Length: 134
Length: 134
Length: 134
Length: 134
Image (cartoon, rainbow over all chains, first blue to last red; front, side):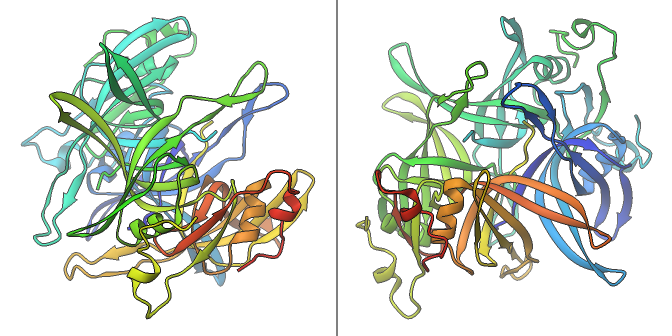
């Protein structure tokens, strides 16, 4: 309750790191969001400053992100926003995380072929491919 | 300004209709969102009632939706929410529309292979395929 | 899970109806959202079409809405979006509901004086005032 | 376009600083969001970690925030999310800002009396009170 839900539309900025944890598969990557701005005088569009987030995902979403998504690809990510302050190397640092609940390649920027996991096949075989197919 | 932005996570309920209009390509489909609910006593999950929306998209997003998405596939859609009251056949009807600004196959439910439009190729050839490949 | 969260910014269109139910106080009112649009040629702003929602609230939020909010006042409402199809008088009707989780007078449009419920006082006395104080 | 909209529900963590700028009044304050979590085993609720944001507002919203809102008060804020990396004192720092488009006292936590600016009165007198009335 009181979770801050957010949807970000942008580009994957790093490889999707995937690893198995005690509570299942986990994926992590950096994500870049660059708003487009229209100049009121000229009417032309330009890029605003980019915001960066760290996206985390678990279980099937983690596996499928690792198996489907590469650096530079356009994505939309929907999830819980969290801002953490942490001490690292003796100084305070701020981390901006999104715990993804859904994510997909942005169809404003290209096409996708979707494939469901085949029933009966081991999900480890069909989905958990840690090397992304690009 | 004051647009109501919404992100819906669910399933495509009808074929994606695609047509050319004076202001470019337009796609339309019905979309079903079914929340999952946890029973406080038993702790088990069950489906809540389904909400239906009509999703509209334009230009490249319209073309790529038509070329990529089939009935029953899981999607997330981010866009502007609009509720219209209209008289049809002598009675007031209510329509709930989402004007999509981004959309993609939901990677919690399967994998996708992403393909950018190839530069130099005609977009009509690479993207505007009005017959969805499923 | 999978709830569709939405924030609407607009005006209260009807009185806030308040009533006691088996599961606590419940408030309901109609809410109007009118987006502002900038004309690309002239640069001037005008009103787009209005969307109407039915807002529901429970418990303390229901009581405080009933005690604080009048017709025409500007509000922002954050909650779960639900679209229901129901048969009424032999025909199918569509209802667009927001189950509010937070709401407040919009400070872009005026000022507010906030008052917390006083500890020890009966909440029926301090908050549940069914006749709005305006 | 492509702005990341977010709604945060929480508490004002610092005084609202108000100042006049070349482009009108500007307000700024820190905002704390603490999610509530239900333990799956025990069913009891507890606080999750708090996220902090810096909220900015302009013009009438800035003036009314300064004139209406005090430290510790519950608010909901709707606006554009921005993550900035900046060098300060020779090291990289991360700032998480929300540019508010609407905000109000959260009626789940108390009551409000709303007052519109009176036409004809100077807005400096009715709204721009830089010393918050609490």
